[in-house]
Image 1 (cartoon, rainbow, N blue to C red):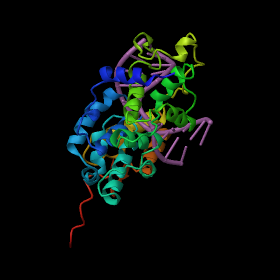
Image 2 (image 1 turned 30 degrees about the vertical axis):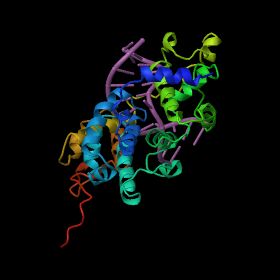
Image 3 (image 1 turned 180 degrees about the vertical axis):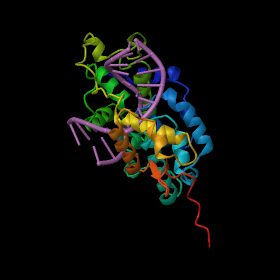
Image 4 (image 1 turned 90 degrees about the horizontal axis):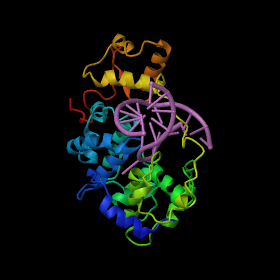
Length: 297
DNA sequence: GATTCGTGGGC
DNA sequence: TGCCCAAGAAT
């Protein structure tokens, strides 16, 4: 089981000083951090986030930027579709929500790139709402401390009910949630949990003698040789050039399987991450800036 | 529910 | 070294 007092006391002294947790950070900037943190470690997000919010502090500022500049600023954080969706999300908030990040979970869920986790994280961490927030850390901590299992089952809607039952009734609920995530990220980690320094004195998993799990929590995703790697190579070439790139320049980025290379380039076009110019060359989508009001002729 | 989508660090 | 994993979302 999880003792709220133990968890909150621990968090008060052990929390990391992450920039998006500091006072004065806006809801939009918290939302940006959540986009970047989707499947990406804190250490890699931190420098990108700092530059990003200094450059584009509001949804409208982000929306006014060119998509290509957004993709470049995203750099090698990975899953560049997140950058595109963040740009789209900024546009919707700027144009349809008065440049104010919605507070309502259901409204947040309707925005591009925002799913179950991110909608609740924004409602909870930016607007201090008492809603359950469930990420991979929370699922693992609950699996161990509450259910006595080494790893969480596949994500399901039941996780939300699980955590809802644990949430304190008062206004400490958001801190409880961030503390649960922090514990999973720094102590109750997937591979080498530091049970010796864990603040929870009633962990079911420990009381059962740390029963082993049944194997990898998730199916291992190969990377080398996959379409993701090829797409990454192609996009890396385009990020590095402010002018359109010829087909030949892209071809050298992946030579072992030309059919795969062609398929991946096509998928980048379909995803709207890459565009083809009239002369047949290629560039990041939205190159040259945009969202400039049409000039009167 | 199962897959796909980047990238890099730790062990 | 190779495998595992990292504040998920969309399809």
